[in-house]
Image (tube, rainbow, N blue to C red; front, side, top):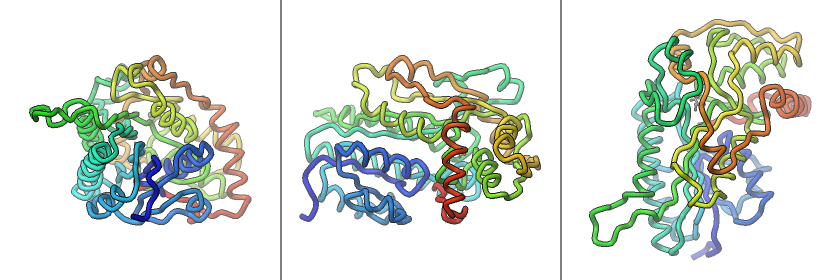
Amino acid sequence: MSGTRRPVVLLTGASGEIGHSLITKLAEDGSRPILTLDLKPLPRDLARLVEREYIGSILERNLLERILSEFEIDLVFHLAALLSTRGEFTPVTAHQVNVEGMLNLLEFAQSERQSHGRPVKFLYPSSIAAYGMPDLAAKAKAGRVKEDDYLQPTTMYGCNKLYTEHLGRYYARHYKQLSADPLGGRVDFRCVRFPGLISAFTVPSGGTSDYAPEMLHHAAQGKPYACFVREDARIPFMAMPDGVEALLRLAAAPQESLSRVVYNVGAFAPTAGEIRELVLKSFPKAEITFAPDLKRQGIVDSWPGDVDDSAARADWGYAPRFGLEAAFGDYLIPNIRKAYVGGSSEEEMVGTS
Ligand code: SER
């Protein structure tokens, strides 16, 4: 057996946008060695922060069994997913990655618990895609949507996320409930429903909230951008550091303070036109036009205009650092200027999924 038997943390989808920021944070904290699993290799500066980098798929059960035999994992961030736009082109693959992959990881966590005896915390990013607003009038009227309302997703990705939230709750509370020795409670499943995430250091791929980060990253590179949603399209967004902080804070919360397994988290909810105005403030020569793709627009219209995250605030102290102006002024613009002036091209920036 080659690995250590110290408790370690596993990140799936580690090469994606959230993974990038989370690895850096976990490495700064230093309390657990980091294992990563992704189809794509990590960039060198991140690879040196991790104890072991597995290149492979969450669908490879043999690989998961190998990891299980080599390490004692007591914390999992299951980030691997195929996002909402890509999922509409390959719905069966989306289901395999998002649902069967999740099932594999939950079974993996259950087995880890059985092998080392300590509960495994399982942190899972779900999405505003789990919601489905019936029409624009209802969306405007609903305002900040609560976790249990409007759960009729229209995308494969949204259906996958909603179902896998339930799977996580099942493993946490009801797993094999008819067996003589009930096995529920061994996976400590905790989930946040993220809004669109915007990072200064990576660009997303395959999502439908991608117009906001794309607008910004194009402007920073002096490239024209035709936004694929209407100027008045509105969904919630969050700066990446707040997303990572939310996952870490939820992971650290005492179980008894959690009244739910799935929590909304929000930060700001601008229209695409308002995002354009903010980008133009910093990049006045940016060419940003609107050329709505009616089908992708339809997906954005089905997502809530904002979310009610009062449960996260009350239960585990969720408090985003960045409102809209601060996200741009203090985080996105300064870092993005440095990144592109430093010579990175968009090709070198990393996409999710
Ligand atoms: N960013 C995701 C997407 O656009 C939503 O969670 O698919």
